[in-house]
Length: 390
Image: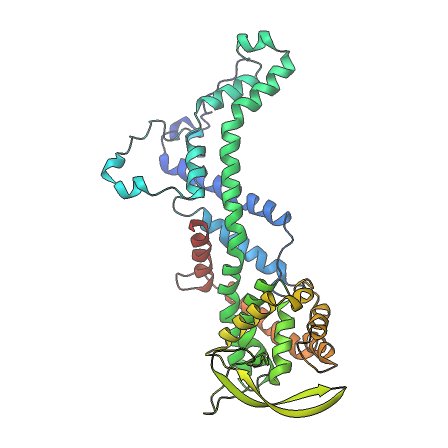
Protein backbone atom coordinates (compact mmCIF):
# COMPACT_ATOMS: atom_id res chain seq x y z
CA UNK A 1 0.00 0.00 0.00
CA UNK A 2 1.38 3.40 -0.95
CA UNK A 3 1.19 6.12 1.71
CA UNK A 4 0.69 9.60 0.33
CA UNK A 5 2.79 12.40 1.68
CA UNK A 6 0.02 14.98 1.19
CA UNK A 7 -2.21 16.11 4.08
CA UNK A 8 -5.23 13.86 4.68
CA UNK A 9 -8.51 15.60 3.89
CA UNK A 10 -10.68 14.61 6.82
CA UNK A 11 -13.49 16.78 5.54
CA UNK A 12 -13.02 17.69 1.85
CA UNK A 13 -16.00 20.03 1.92
CA UNK A 14 -14.21 22.26 4.41
CA UNK A 15 -10.64 21.93 3.18
CA UNK A 16 -10.57 25.56 2.13
CA UNK A 17 -11.98 26.86 5.44
CA UNK A 18 -8.94 28.90 6.44
CA UNK A 19 -10.56 30.14 9.66
CA UNK A 20 -11.20 26.61 10.90
CA UNK A 21 -7.68 25.50 9.98
CA UNK A 22 -6.21 28.51 11.77
CA UNK A 23 -8.28 27.79 14.88
CA UNK A 24 -7.20 24.16 15.00
CA UNK A 25 -3.56 25.10 14.38
CA UNK A 26 -3.61 27.63 17.21
CA UNK A 27 -5.16 25.08 19.55
CA UNK A 28 -2.38 22.64 18.72
CA UNK A 29 0.18 25.38 19.29
CA UNK A 30 -1.37 26.13 22.68
CA UNK A 31 -1.17 22.47 23.68
CA UNK A 32 2.47 22.38 22.56
CA UNK A 33 3.29 25.50 24.60
CA UNK A 34 1.69 24.06 27.73
CA UNK A 35 3.52 20.74 27.33
CA UNK A 36 6.82 22.51 26.72
CA UNK A 37 6.44 24.74 29.79
CA UNK A 38 5.39 21.77 31.91
CA UNK A 39 8.48 19.84 30.81
CA UNK A 40 10.71 22.80 31.65
CA UNK A 41 9.01 23.20 35.02
CA UNK A 42 9.43 19.50 35.84
CA UNK A 43 13.14 19.79 35.11
CA UNK A 44 13.69 22.83 37.36
CA UNK A 45 14.15 23.19 41.10
CA UNK A 46 11.48 25.88 41.33
CA UNK A 47 11.21 29.03 43.40
CA UNK A 48 8.39 28.99 45.94
CA UNK A 49 6.57 32.22 46.66
CA UNK A 50 5.36 30.83 49.95
CA UNK A 51 6.37 27.67 51.81
CA UNK A 52 4.03 24.86 50.76
CA UNK A 53 1.97 26.97 48.39
CA UNK A 54 4.17 27.14 45.30
CA UNK A 55 2.10 24.77 43.13
CA UNK A 56 -0.89 27.13 42.92
CA UNK A 57 1.19 30.08 41.75
CA UNK A 58 3.20 27.99 39.31
CA UNK A 59 0.07 26.59 37.72
CA UNK A 60 -1.46 30.07 37.41
CA UNK A 61 1.74 31.44 35.97
CA UNK A 62 2.22 28.56 33.54
CA UNK A 63 -1.34 28.87 32.23
CA UNK A 64 -0.98 32.60 31.67
CA UNK A 65 2.47 32.26 30.16
CA UNK A 66 1.29 29.63 27.68
CA UNK A 67 -1.63 31.89 26.73
CA UNK A 68 0.65 34.90 26.40
CA UNK A 69 3.20 33.07 24.26
CA UNK A 70 0.56 31.91 21.78
CA UNK A 71 -1.29 35.22 21.38
CA UNK A 72 -0.87 37.31 18.26
CA UNK A 73 2.00 35.94 16.17
CA UNK A 74 2.49 33.27 18.84
CA UNK A 75 5.41 30.87 18.63
CA UNK A 76 5.00 30.50 14.89
CA UNK A 77 4.22 26.80 15.11
CA UNK A 78 0.60 27.47 14.18
CA UNK A 79 1.74 28.46 10.67
CA UNK A 80 3.62 25.22 10.23
CA UNK A 81 0.70 23.17 11.58
CA UNK A 82 -1.79 25.02 9.37
CA UNK A 83 0.36 24.28 6.34
CA UNK A 84 0.31 20.58 7.22
CA UNK A 85 -3.46 20.69 7.62
CA UNK A 86 -3.80 21.99 4.10
CA UNK A 87 -3.98 25.69 4.70
CA UNK A 88 -1.77 28.30 3.12
CA UNK A 89 -0.85 26.18 0.12
CA UNK A 90 0.07 29.20 -1.97
CA UNK A 91 3.49 30.63 -1.11
CA UNK A 92 3.44 34.05 0.51
CA UNK A 93 4.75 36.87 -1.70
CA UNK A 94 8.27 38.00 -0.93
CA UNK A 95 8.45 41.18 1.11
CA UNK A 96 10.42 44.09 -0.25
CA UNK A 97 12.61 44.87 2.73
CA UNK A 98 14.05 47.78 0.83
CA UNK A 99 10.82 49.64 1.60
CA UNK A 100 11.34 48.93 5.29
CA UNK A 101 15.00 49.78 6.02
CA UNK A 102 14.47 49.79 9.78
CA UNK A 103 13.05 46.30 9.77
CA UNK A 104 15.79 45.09 7.44
CA UNK A 105 18.65 46.52 9.50
CA UNK A 106 17.52 45.51 13.00
CA UNK A 107 18.82 42.03 13.91
CA UNK A 108 16.14 39.51 14.79
CA UNK A 109 15.56 38.53 18.40
CA UNK A 110 16.57 34.99 19.42
CA UNK A 111 13.01 33.71 19.41
CA UNK A 112 12.28 35.40 16.09
CA UNK A 113 15.42 33.92 14.55
CA UNK A 114 14.47 30.48 15.79
CA UNK A 115 10.96 30.77 14.37
CA UNK A 116 12.27 31.98 11.02
CA UNK A 117 14.51 28.92 10.85
CA UNK A 118 11.59 26.65 11.69
CA UNK A 119 9.38 28.34 9.12
CA UNK A 120 12.13 27.93 6.51
CA UNK A 121 12.30 24.13 6.84
CA UNK A 122 11.28 22.82 3.38
CA UNK A 123 7.92 21.10 3.10
CA UNK A 124 9.73 18.40 1.09
CA UNK A 125 11.24 17.14 4.32
CA UNK A 126 7.82 15.97 5.44
CA UNK A 127 7.40 13.89 2.30
CA UNK A 128 10.92 12.53 2.66
CA UNK A 129 10.25 11.49 6.23
CA UNK A 130 7.07 9.70 5.17
CA UNK A 131 9.02 7.99 2.39
CA UNK A 132 11.50 6.71 4.92
CA UNK A 133 8.82 5.47 7.29
CA UNK A 134 7.07 3.69 4.41
CA UNK A 135 10.36 2.10 3.27
CA UNK A 136 10.64 4.25 0.14
CA UNK A 137 14.27 5.30 0.62
CA UNK A 138 15.89 6.49 -2.62
CA UNK A 139 17.63 3.69 -4.50
CA UNK A 140 21.08 5.32 -4.38
CA UNK A 141 20.99 5.50 -0.60
CA UNK A 142 19.52 2.04 -0.22
CA UNK A 143 22.25 0.45 -2.32
CA UNK A 144 25.02 1.95 -0.20
CA UNK A 145 23.59 1.08 3.21
CA UNK A 146 21.81 -1.68 5.03
CA UNK A 147 18.05 -1.18 5.37
CA UNK A 148 18.18 -0.31 9.07
CA UNK A 149 21.26 1.91 8.85
CA UNK A 150 19.83 3.75 5.89
CA UNK A 151 16.53 4.33 7.64
CA UNK A 152 18.03 5.71 10.85
CA UNK A 153 20.81 7.76 9.28
CA UNK A 154 18.66 9.36 6.60
CA UNK A 155 15.80 10.04 8.99
CA UNK A 156 18.12 11.84 11.41
CA UNK A 157 19.98 13.68 8.66
CA UNK A 158 16.91 14.90 6.83
CA UNK A 159 15.00 15.78 9.98
CA UNK A 160 17.94 17.67 11.49
CA UNK A 161 16.99 21.13 10.15
CA UNK A 162 13.55 20.85 11.73
CA UNK A 163 14.99 19.43 14.94
CA UNK A 164 17.52 22.26 15.17
CA UNK A 165 14.88 24.89 14.55
CA UNK A 166 12.49 23.44 17.12
CA UNK A 167 15.38 23.16 19.56
CA UNK A 168 16.16 26.84 19.09
CA UNK A 169 12.51 27.68 19.75
CA UNK A 170 12.52 25.62 22.95
CA UNK A 171 15.76 27.22 24.08
CA UNK A 172 14.53 30.75 23.41
CA UNK A 173 11.23 30.14 25.16
CA UNK A 174 13.07 28.38 27.99
CA UNK A 175 15.17 31.48 28.56
CA UNK A 176 11.98 33.54 28.68
CA UNK A 177 10.46 31.10 31.16
CA UNK A 178 13.52 31.56 33.32
CA UNK A 179 13.13 35.36 33.29
CA UNK A 180 9.39 35.71 33.53
CA UNK A 181 8.28 33.95 36.76
CA UNK A 182 9.53 36.71 39.05
CA UNK A 183 7.82 39.38 36.96
CA UNK A 184 4.52 37.50 36.92
CA UNK A 185 4.76 36.60 40.60
CA UNK A 186 5.33 40.24 41.58
CA UNK A 187 2.34 41.30 39.48
CA UNK A 188 0.10 39.05 41.61
CA UNK A 189 1.71 39.25 45.05
CA UNK A 190 2.37 42.97 45.34
CA UNK A 191 -1.27 44.13 45.06
CA UNK A 192 -2.29 41.31 47.40
CA UNK A 193 0.29 42.40 49.98
CA UNK A 194 -0.81 46.03 49.74
CA UNK A 195 -4.42 45.03 50.35
CA UNK A 196 -3.46 42.92 53.37
CA UNK A 197 -1.30 45.72 54.81
CA UNK A 198 -4.25 48.10 54.55
CA UNK A 199 -6.63 45.61 56.18
CA UNK A 200 -4.36 44.93 59.19
CA UNK A 201 -3.33 48.56 59.59
CA UNK A 202 0.12 50.21 59.51
CA UNK A 203 0.75 49.84 63.26
CA UNK A 204 0.09 46.10 63.43
CA UNK A 205 2.90 43.51 63.12
CA UNK A 206 0.98 41.75 60.34
CA UNK A 207 0.55 45.04 58.50
CA UNK A 208 4.29 45.68 58.72
CA UNK A 209 5.05 42.24 57.28
CA UNK A 210 2.65 42.77 54.39
CA UNK A 211 3.99 46.27 53.68
CA UNK A 212 7.54 45.02 53.06
CA UNK A 213 6.81 41.52 51.72
CA UNK A 214 7.06 42.53 48.06
CA UNK A 215 10.48 44.16 48.53
CA UNK A 216 11.61 41.25 50.69
CA UNK A 217 10.74 38.84 47.87
CA UNK A 218 12.85 40.79 45.38
CA UNK A 219 15.80 41.09 47.76
CA UNK A 220 15.61 37.39 48.65
CA UNK A 221 15.75 36.44 44.97
CA UNK A 222 18.88 38.59 44.58
CA UNK A 223 20.54 36.93 47.55
CA UNK A 224 19.21 33.43 46.99
CA UNK A 225 17.73 33.18 50.49
CA UNK A 226 14.30 32.83 52.11
CA UNK A 227 12.32 36.09 52.15
CA UNK A 228 11.02 35.24 55.62
CA UNK A 229 14.54 35.65 56.99
CA UNK A 230 14.74 39.22 55.68
CA UNK A 231 11.30 40.13 56.99
CA UNK A 232 12.13 38.63 60.38
CA UNK A 233 15.39 40.57 60.57
CA UNK A 234 13.64 43.81 59.64
CA UNK A 235 10.96 43.10 62.26
CA UNK A 236 13.65 42.53 64.91
CA UNK A 237 15.60 45.67 63.99
CA UNK A 238 12.54 47.93 63.90
CA UNK A 239 10.21 46.37 66.49
CA UNK A 240 7.70 45.32 63.80
CA UNK A 241 8.02 48.76 62.21
CA UNK A 242 7.17 50.69 65.38
CA UNK A 243 10.72 51.83 66.20
CA UNK A 244 12.13 52.73 62.81
CA UNK A 245 15.03 55.18 63.09
CA UNK A 246 13.91 58.78 62.51
CA UNK A 247 15.57 61.80 61.00
CA UNK A 248 16.04 64.98 63.00
CA UNK A 249 12.82 66.38 61.52
CA UNK A 250 10.82 63.42 62.78
CA UNK A 251 10.42 61.69 59.43
CA UNK A 252 11.40 58.07 59.03
CA UNK A 253 14.90 57.21 57.86
CA UNK A 254 13.55 53.98 56.31
CA UNK A 255 16.48 52.03 57.80
CA UNK A 256 14.93 48.57 58.18
CA UNK A 257 18.11 46.62 58.97
CA UNK A 258 19.90 48.81 61.52
CA UNK A 259 22.83 49.51 59.19
CA UNK A 260 25.18 52.07 60.72
CA UNK A 261 26.67 54.97 58.78
CA UNK A 262 30.32 53.91 59.03
CA UNK A 263 31.89 54.87 55.70
CA UNK A 264 28.50 56.10 54.45
CA UNK A 265 28.48 59.23 52.28
CA UNK A 266 24.73 59.59 52.14
CA UNK A 267 22.23 61.08 54.55
CA UNK A 268 22.44 60.02 58.19
CA UNK A 269 20.17 59.81 61.19
CA UNK A 270 21.29 59.59 64.83
CA UNK A 271 19.54 57.18 67.17
CA UNK A 272 19.89 55.33 70.45
CA UNK A 273 20.88 51.70 70.09
CA UNK A 274 21.50 48.73 72.36
CA UNK A 275 24.81 46.91 72.02
CA UNK A 276 26.42 44.02 73.87
CA UNK A 277 29.97 43.88 75.18
CA UNK A 278 31.18 40.69 76.90
CA UNK A 279 27.55 39.63 77.16
CA UNK A 280 26.53 42.84 78.95
CA UNK A 281 23.94 45.09 77.32
CA UNK A 282 24.49 48.83 77.22
CA UNK A 283 22.98 51.85 75.45
CA UNK A 284 24.77 54.24 73.12
CA UNK A 285 24.14 56.83 70.43
CA UNK A 286 25.18 56.10 66.86
CA UNK A 287 24.71 57.38 63.33
CA UNK A 288 22.70 55.22 60.94
CA UNK A 289 22.15 55.33 57.20
CA UNK A 290 19.02 57.12 55.99
CA UNK A 291 17.09 56.15 52.87
CA UNK A 292 14.38 57.69 50.75
CA UNK A 293 12.18 54.59 50.85
CA UNK A 294 12.01 51.02 52.17
CA UNK A 295 12.99 49.85 48.68
CA UNK A 296 16.29 51.77 48.97
CA UNK A 297 16.90 50.17 52.36
CA UNK A 298 16.45 46.68 50.89
CA UNK A 299 18.67 47.54 47.91
CA UNK A 300 21.49 48.77 50.15
CA UNK A 301 21.16 45.69 52.37
CA UNK A 302 21.46 43.43 49.31
CA UNK A 303 24.58 45.28 48.13
CA UNK A 304 26.21 45.00 51.55
CA UNK A 305 25.49 41.27 51.97
CA UNK A 306 26.53 40.41 48.41
CA UNK A 307 29.75 42.41 48.25
CA UNK A 308 31.14 42.09 51.78
CA UNK A 309 33.29 38.93 51.95
CA UNK A 310 32.47 38.29 55.59
CA UNK A 311 28.87 37.47 54.66
CA UNK A 312 29.83 34.75 52.18
CA UNK A 313 28.57 32.01 54.51
CA UNK A 314 25.20 33.76 54.78
CA UNK A 315 24.83 33.74 51.00
CA UNK A 316 25.52 30.02 50.95
CA UNK A 317 22.68 29.27 53.38
CA UNK A 318 20.01 29.14 50.67
CA UNK A 319 16.51 28.76 52.09
CA UNK A 320 17.68 27.76 55.58
CA UNK A 321 16.57 30.68 57.76
CA UNK A 322 18.39 29.47 60.86
CA UNK A 323 21.64 28.97 58.98
CA UNK A 324 21.35 32.40 57.35
CA UNK A 325 20.75 34.14 60.68
CA UNK A 326 23.60 32.24 62.36
CA UNK A 327 25.98 33.21 59.56
CA UNK A 328 25.05 36.88 59.99
CA UNK A 329 25.70 36.69 63.72
CA UNK A 330 29.02 34.89 63.31
CA UNK A 331 30.08 37.52 60.75
CA UNK A 332 29.51 40.25 63.33
CA UNK A 333 26.34 41.78 61.90
CA UNK A 334 25.02 42.35 65.44
CA UNK A 335 26.43 42.08 68.96
CA UNK A 336 23.32 40.51 70.48
CA UNK A 337 24.31 36.92 71.41
CA UNK A 338 20.75 35.75 70.71
CA UNK A 339 20.42 37.57 67.38
CA UNK A 340 20.13 34.39 65.28
CA UNK A 341 17.69 32.80 67.73
CA UNK A 342 15.42 35.84 67.59
CA UNK A 343 15.39 35.99 63.78
CA UNK A 344 14.64 32.28 63.51
CA UNK A 345 11.86 32.54 66.10
CA UNK A 346 10.19 35.44 64.29
CA UNK A 347 10.52 33.80 60.87
CA UNK A 348 8.78 30.66 62.11
CA UNK A 349 6.36 32.40 64.45
CA UNK A 350 2.58 32.87 64.29
CA UNK A 351 2.66 36.58 63.37
CA UNK A 352 4.55 36.02 60.16
CA UNK A 353 2.42 32.98 59.41
CA UNK A 354 -0.82 34.98 59.80
CA UNK A 355 0.43 37.74 57.52
CA UNK A 356 1.69 35.39 54.80
CA UNK A 357 -1.47 33.29 54.97
CA UNK A 358 -3.57 36.43 54.46
CA UNK A 359 -1.41 37.49 51.51
CA UNK A 360 -1.75 34.02 49.98
CA UNK A 361 -5.54 34.10 50.34
CA UNK A 362 -5.75 37.57 48.82
CA UNK A 363 -3.48 36.54 45.94
CA UNK A 364 -5.71 33.56 45.17
CA UNK A 365 -8.74 35.84 45.16
CA UNK A 366 -7.04 38.22 42.74
CA UNK A 367 -5.88 35.37 40.54
CA UNK A 368 -9.36 33.86 40.41
CA UNK A 369 -11.10 36.98 39.10
CA UNK A 370 -12.15 37.39 35.48
CA UNK A 371 -9.27 38.41 33.26
CA UNK A 372 -9.81 41.96 32.10
CA UNK A 373 -7.32 44.33 30.46
CA UNK A 374 -6.76 46.11 33.78
CA UNK A 375 -6.70 42.90 35.80
CA UNK A 376 -3.50 41.92 37.54
CA UNK A 377 -3.22 38.62 35.71
CA UNK A 378 -3.61 40.32 32.38
CA UNK A 379 -0.75 42.56 33.45
CA UNK A 380 1.20 39.45 34.38
CA UNK A 381 0.63 37.92 30.94
CA UNK A 382 1.75 41.17 29.33
CA UNK A 383 4.88 41.12 31.51
CA UNK A 384 5.61 37.58 30.37
CA UNK A 385 5.30 38.62 26.73
CA UNK A 386 7.69 41.51 27.30
CA UNK A 387 10.16 39.11 28.91
CA UNK A 388 10.09 37.00 25.74
CA UNK A 389 10.76 40.03 23.55
CA UNK A 390 13.72 41.32 25.58
